[in-house]
Image (cartoon, rainbow, N blue to C red; front, side, top):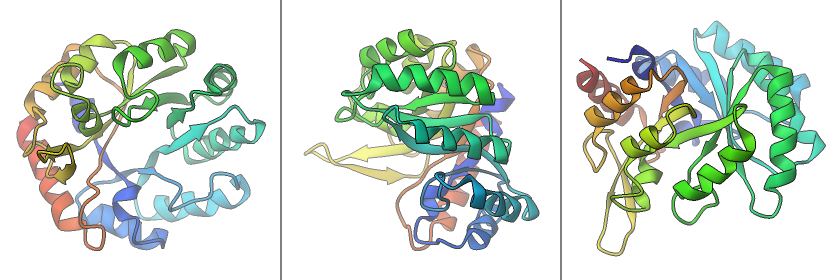
Length: 250
């Protein structure tokens, strides 16, 4: 079993109804975890001068900030601050979106910042309606951005595009040298194509198969759980997600 694939944390968006970082850090520990990918709900990544206090809060709680995002890059000079914040936290990954109208310019700048700060960037696939959510588009973006830019594979949003092109394990095999991050997430779907979050491994995600695929490529990146339901009280479901992950990896 590939152990880095089981060394997971949690995405802070799960706690979006809680804006006090001390409370969020405590809830991470309640889930039995000690790592977090911090999103913009819980910090202003445009203010590196204030971000040090956020880092201190999590460090004192024993929670490592392993990634920031998801951030949408348009190629503006001020976006360099996001890398500065990642470096302040000691994070080696930043989850990202690009925009169809600006991705050539943005990718060039992001590659330079990635090299400067030593932070890899994973493009988050956000379903069939988002730029980068389809594997052929992702392959083109990677052809422009590698090796600084890879994939942050959101397993549920991969599933959303359909059973063939959307198989998360096949994404891993299609991009074996480019999987820099994982969002472990699971969906079930209604007859109209609507989606609903469920405990990881209890919906359409073949969790053991995904972990096996990650083992095949010797995955060594950032990984977090993401469960967006129950925002007022996410800890019980996240604990069940943790248990499901650990059973699948046993």
